[in-house]
Every structure is written in structure tokens, then in C-alpha cells.
Length: 240
View 1 (cartoon, rainbow, N blue to C red):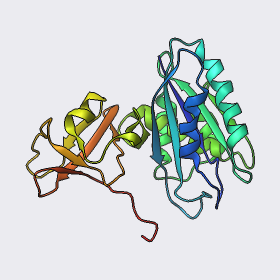
View 2 (tube, rainbow, N blue to C red):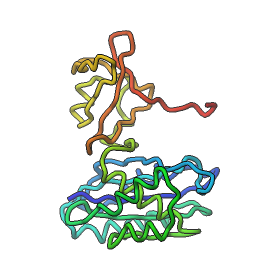
View 3 (cartoon, one colour):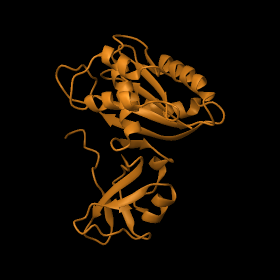
């Protein structure tokens, strides 16, 4: 079964790492029989009324577990992980939901609102219902982003992968066939929507981040003018 674990606001201005890295580290704390399917970053509303560290994003670890018996252990492990690594001055939140035998409609509806509305902790708690949602310091405002990370990831059509099958270790450029053997579908955004060939090369400029579309990792690419492909949406430089 699949379990969604949302984390938010575990960092502070000037900290050495952010929530995304903390969530990726969580793979090392998974109990036996559980594996990390991927980690998805979700973008929430940018608004002056919302306190956030840098980009108002949260992250969701998607775990493949043998059955529901792993739910309690995963929740305890995730909470301990936050307690250990959350930066002083942060407002951490944690949300844990199982995909099967759970009604995710409420938390998905709430998460969509988080992308264009200012919401409250009380609304997050109501949306989570019987699912686990907890604050772990500061104002506990992180429960909002943690719940939103779960809902948007469960929705399956937004967010970008910051971990999936060791994507950070892939060569640049990388062949389409290599990406697809790992479960990453390469999709052309070229005007003619040409199907990329298995032998075609994809240039990522050192930043390969598939999108979560249709519940799976999709890498959008465009022709580079030299017979190959280039990833859409490069990482912005710090100067930018």
C-alpha cells in the first residue's frame, strides 16, 4: 500500500538545509519492508499574509509499505525525524495518510485551496479528519503545508520530484531509454509533439526534476535545435 507523509516548515532563514533535504534524508529511517517511491515538492500560495521561509513550498515522501501495520511505525519515525533535524525557529508540521482504505477527498480539496487562498490551522485539522496531523514546534503553522503536500501529491497532477530512483546521480545528458527504464516518462512539449526516440539524449543542465502528472513522474522536454532534447524548467541561478 502507498502512504503519503507530508512535511513542512522545518527550516529557517539562513539554515544550512531546507525541508526538501530533510524529507529526502527520511529514506534512511524507513522501517523494514518499506521503500521510498519518491519525494515530491509542492508549491503553495505566495502571499504577504503567509509567513514562510523562502518559497512557501512543502514536500511529501511517498512510501510503499507492505500493509497498514507500517502506518504507526512510519508516523513515529517521521515525528522523531522532525524532532531531530528541524531547525530552531521553525514551525514544523507532519501529516500522514494512507492511500488505500482512506477518504482523501477532504484533504485534496483543502490542498488545492492552499495554492490560491490563505487558510488556517483549524481548516487544516478539519480537512485531515482522522488522518495524522501534528505540529512539532513554534507556531505549528507547518501543519498547513504538511497537509497540503499530502493532498496535492495524492491529487497526482502537480508538483515536481526532488527524489525518484536516484535521479540526482544520472549522467547529463542522459538517454531517453535510461529515463524510461527507471519509470520516468519523457514527454515532448515541442510544437509538433514529436515522440522522443529511445536513443535520443536529454540535457538537464545538471538539474533533472520530473513533474508529477497523471500520478507518475513525467519529464517535459523540448527540442534543443541540435537533434536532442532539453528539460523544461531549469533551476534559477541565485543571482536571478
